[in-house]
Length: 204
Image (cartoon, rainbow, N blue to C red; front, top):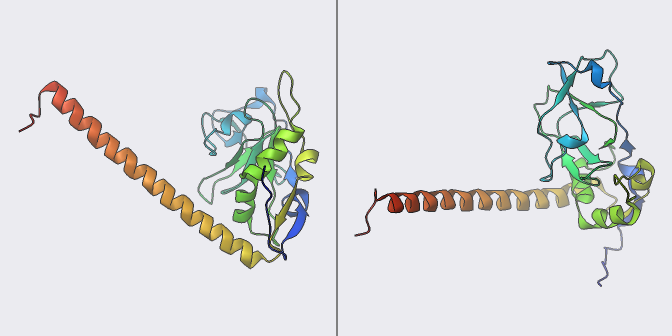
């Protein structure tokens, strides 16, 4: 057991005040199309924190403001096997997706840095609160009301939030580059081993 000590000027906030969770739309499966706007369903929120997999499509609506998603949208699975899993949508800035029901979208607030919020909801502090409110059963689920009530301490100044997010982003970049280097070296090793086994390369 340990206690987290925050700087004196950090303030306790309720998540719903800085990034209120928006519910999705109940699209009719019999109106899915072969082409159109991809719909982000729970199955598209992947364990690695990305959005992908097989999408279904829907015809573009004239007024879709209440369920449209764009690049860098921060999403959460509200039910199913991945309940509580947070993912970031990555796409071209001109693209758009639709948000299905039981997929939550953390809305942006101009007073707070959205990248900082993304690290907040992907943290162990967030996961611990998810576990406290998780409704177990045949299909686990959480409610927007529960998630909006989560409490955190954050710096009140957006400039400080941006600075923290920048440092964490740099860490992520270094880690990803290191992982790519390891994978590249493994591929070289495996290739050399295959050559040795097949007799194409001889040790001198």
